[in-house]
Amino acid sequence: MRRKLAALGLLIALPLLCDAPAVLADSSDGSCSQTNATFVDSAPQVLGVLGIPDAWAYSTGAGVTVAVVDSGVDVGNVHLGDAVLPGIDLTSDGDGRNDVAGVGTAIAGMIAARQVDSSGMIGIAPEAMILPVRAYQTTDTNNPHQPLADVTAHGIVWAADHGAKIIVVPTPLADDSQTLHAAVDYALANGALTVAAVGDTTTNASNSSDSAPRFPAAYPSVLGVTATGADGTVGSDVVHNETVQVAAYGTNVLSTYFGAGDCYFATEKPSTTYAAGYVGGIAALVAARFPDESPDLWRYRILVTASRPVPYQRDNDIGWGMINAQAALTFVNDGTMVGPPNPLGAPPASATPASPQLIPPVSTGLPLRDRMAIGICAAIVILLFVVVLFLTTARSRPIQS
Image 1 (tube, one colour):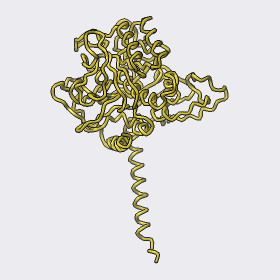
Image 2 (image 1 turned 180 degrees about the vertical axis):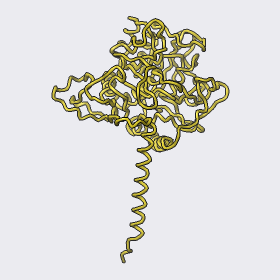
Image 3 (image 1 turned 180 degrees about the horizontal axis):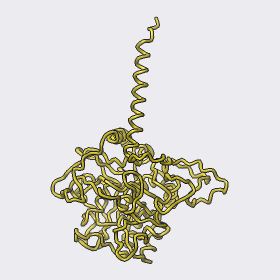
Image 4 (image 1 turned 90 degrees about the horizontal axis):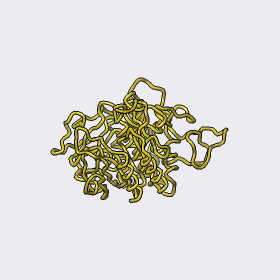
């Protein structure tokens, strides 16, 4: 499997040399079809942006179960049939393997979609398993984001009791709840890390300000995720506050659409809901590589290796920085790194931040994808020059008798 993924990684990098692939279907304008499957032949560009092909050399998520507590997961999607376990529907009879809104299926695909013919779509952790937990209280597709705190809490506890190591809650709630708080603490104590969106400024915010905390991301035991745009910056469309712990790409998201094929989500502005899906996938890679570590250590790996301008400082925009999958998988926790609190103990005051993360370069004014494309093109040119030079030298070298 890893040899196949390594080869796929080379293919994933190639689209970055060209313009973005044509958007064949977009959930925001209604062009995605539940009856006519549409496939996108290019891999999600975010895989290259987040360095996922390099991370696959260390982990593909095998052996890890990821719970998606949301609208259910449609197993009719060809990417997900072999990836989804029987779960639970907390709103009616069923096992969670049907979707009333499409969000759960999209998040599941971002995490664990299997690659199939005619499509380049593949998940962050393509050997992880998905445990669907439907917590939505409505089937109204025009207003589907109505999970209740107590139902979501029940789903988190159920997932922790049924083998989930990573629990993703992509739809944030505006209201605090003692039951929900207790649920994420219970999950942590039972070996599961909860990953949750910090919220968009228009999500469940009718009774709160744009900077108000959303839940369960606001609880200390949860990994709170914000979203960046294509240029790697966090805009005004997402919540900015002390609950932000890590940032991930959250726009033009290619993923699975109901029981049909592929679709683009969040095409107009970044969404923390989908950024949480990507972080959940990377958390699955970490959990698979370090099964003997605690969820607190998985979270620490992700936070301490995130890319940020000042290693010892977080802020309310990007938290501890932009997630860095390969760095999280290769980090050695020797107690010397500055940054977020280390579950193994604080580093010495004189610790030097010999940081493994890739600090973003000074902005050139170009989008992140274009800057990466320029770098890749330069590398290819250098490689071709070396090959030509080698062949020329070999051809001109006299044959020894």
